[in-house]
Length: 284
Image (cartoon, rainbow, N blue to C red):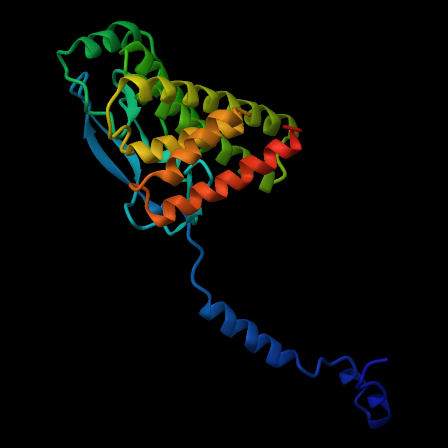
């Protein structure tokens, strides 16, 4: 029985079901809604920017994330950044719709129209590629994945350095991880989720292979990263694929280096603890 039951005796039976704090609760919800910041939407964190293709000279536009607009929530162990309301990885490939040349924004203009690399792109990509039009407000994961695949094949065709190919593979792995996580959150197809998990491993294995090669043959900075960062990244990837001796050696080098700051050494210590724990689980 309700707290106001029995009002019928007073001729007020229609009021017996009243919620005595209903108005206060409504007012409280109104105030909370007014005080809450508006939800950050992906479309509000990007903009269209015009570019000139260094291979064919045609102008085109691409969606770019607004620098400094998205709030950084943190980073994964392998340095993938997580932002509120957007997966920044989706917006780091530039693709010319006229000739099909695609590259990470860092490398897009590092090719001349008359260079041997541009000639290779024109010969092996431009004549047959079919670039799809993107008319949505944001890039879907499927669209972003297509752009990354084109950037990787262009890097192979133009005979890019191992570091550039490794960096594309690394970011492709991050992209696939974000795609998988979004499907998991929305209760997506389990088979697709497992497929993406396998693809993430494949991309990151290729990233590891490429960075190992680049570490032996190229100088620093590499992909915008210094030697310490590359060694840390290699340690993370080595541990992921159970190369514990390599990972442990790299972590020890970072911890012993006077060049590594306190924050970086803390990350290395966390990784060392994880490696020890993983080795115990593996019975090593």
